[in-house]
Image 1 (tube, rainbow over the protein chains, first blue to last red):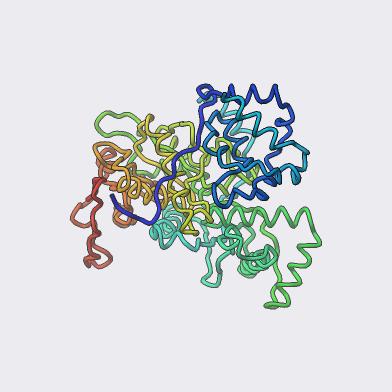
Image 2: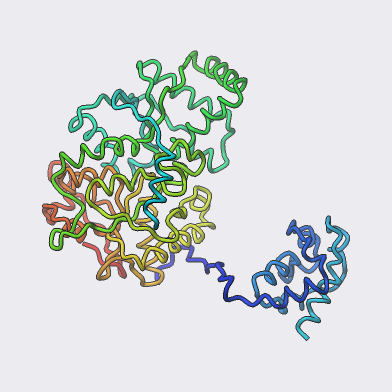
Length: 105
Length: 356
């Protein structure tokens, strides 16, 4: 296999007819304010855990909308709550994280 | 593809293309990638179609590559373009035809910006005067070279020696048309056929006997995308886009691809080699790739020019199986003979994709 210093990236295309969005759908019922997220990324930018663990609240919400498992990422959250303070939509992100964890129980 | 629907769209996006007297400007990169293409444009237009196509050695880059790589201010690009227009004015022409798709998009964008903001045009005129004491008229007509070949496509078909049909079965060859992003996606009304289904290359394929293949990622970028390729860390993204296109067109078994952009034929051609080396997969028949042609090369083939005079030996994907299907006469031994029949040396062959 030739090494060109770069390689094909895995496609991020999803088939909306095949993915399971039940976790996100249940979350929208218990915490409707998650729907007001505009994916600005302020939460991710201020996250203390992000530079060391790859935790990103913005990625968590996007992954849920795409039907992907977010538990490995959530386990990195320290629940410090800094993300709540910077959210321009006033979403209680820490509460959302706890709610997502409950969806998997 | 609902053909009647396409015809409706195409009829909504037509533009006036004068039949003669064009001021021609070349691309920065096409002559390095596929050097015979621009040479063939002047050969066909001047010597075959007997048109007045003028060019001057004093023209420069339009600044489009730097502009789309975010490394040059727009006013500087506009002043460069103003100088190009001044050369056209000096030569006594008013129909401007660039060979590069990005140049075409760049000129279209600048003319539209000046129409919208006349005070900016005045400032650029002042910049040009201060920089080199030049003045200019704006072109009356702006077209891309593929627009001109499209305009004369039926005449080329009449004069042609070959048609894009399988010589054994008589079936039309299946051709994928790939339009450069800067041709129509910015200003659909400046393109032949609009942005969704531009007709410029499809019209050539139909006139020359081929069949246009529709496929889901037809309008997807070739993968070049300027920043995506020029930043080495992004090249995986570049080749992934090309891979996406080939995966999408594979089920439709195209025989060849025709393009009208400097970057597209290069990347659709060379990335097939990279994909084959990295994954072992090829997309053409019997372990070959899908040959990628510029519209000048295909026009030259139709007109009966020697494939090696068209520079087809510089393609990564072997073109011989396609030539054999049409029945084009060529000497395989002359493939790597340059001008004066001097040996130009043979490239190292790929390990996963068949090549000659």
